[in-house]
Length: 169
Image (cartoon, one colour):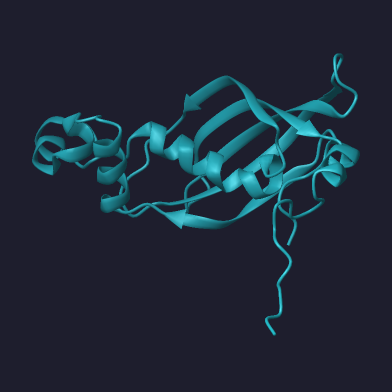
């Protein structure tokens, strides 16, 4: 299974459909909120949400949705990355609720060779997240510094750092 891509493997206009999707549970949302110290009742207090919000239920915290989509994209986009450089834009288009399933896809918008080092380049992607009904819920653009194949091969190839099995005896 391929994990990430080298700079040469990216093509402007390519679309990577990230698989599988992830169903967001109340536990996922609450744990993320508590780990990040976001105690807003919109995300944690179902009574508050039912009584005082237009949605009448908890809304999944947006940074979890973004983080989920970012994680989904790693195998296709940044699995070989040297660095994530920038998130250019991030929009939460529609709310996500407990029980929604999120699917993601990324489009390669641009790729530019590094001006300072010839063994890498910068790839710009736009990632979109959809719920189970195909409704766009989140969209963001980011730039990733990606190695060229020669860089990767000089550092262990497709599975750098993986030890060779030894036989005892």
